[in-house]
Length: 113
Length: 113
DNA sequence: GGCATATTCAACCATTTGGTTGACGGTTTG
DNA sequence: CAAACCGTCAACCAAATGGTTGAATATGCC
Image 1 (tube, chains in turn cyan, yellow, brown, red):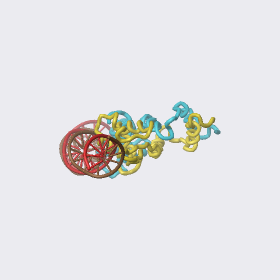
Image 2: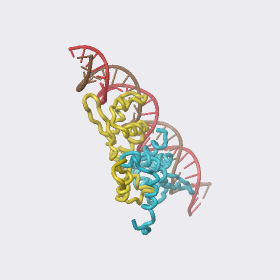
Image 3: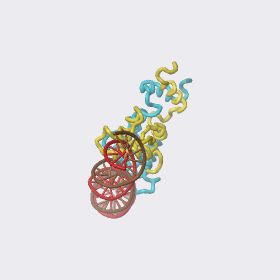
Image 4: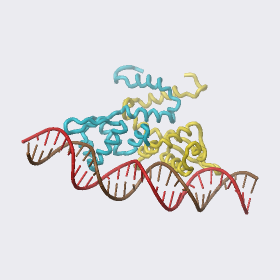
């Protein structure tokens, strides 16, 4: 493994970890709260979170006795860009794609195409 | 693992397998030729190819005594869509993205946009 | 101080992964 | 037919993965 992209993909290859990421999409969460919906030990979830953190997909910050987990979506970018090298995306102009995103992702009631 | 998305991500988590996919981006290849640049046994590459095939990322067709490997980029779509749930891609309009691709990825000397 | 809460550590276990080697089954060619 | 080539299978191995439990470490509260 070792390289960055491999680490990210490996982290994403586990459904529990993907579920955790989906949960964190809503809001930052404490480790205990992340663990709550799963029927596995807190230690197991703690390990999953460590893996997500070492892949850069989340960051953890301890405030008081609780450790808050925060999604870091930017870590997906490199892997996402790798994937865009394939399929319909293979000849993509990344600058044009960037411009596309800027207009497409503008605030809801902003522009009329 | 078991689910489709997990299988695809797991397949992508290995640098050898990603290298193979990159090679297949150029052209279809025989197993032996895929194995050539790597310094590991043919059997090992054969296993990697089986993993890529079971993830749906490639297909293999035997013609005569050689087995041809072909990239199947569509298998990346589901995983790619999953990733788009995060980060800057979360509010993307897939139809608009499709139209964008159609113009942006038009065959070199085919039609003038 | 003492107890409850939040999280990790350490040791352990079963299974999977990524690799090796050698034998084997098809296919092509001399 | 026999020899060479293509690829997989089977058995094995070391290391990584995903999980468990119980003890340990912080922190907060009465």
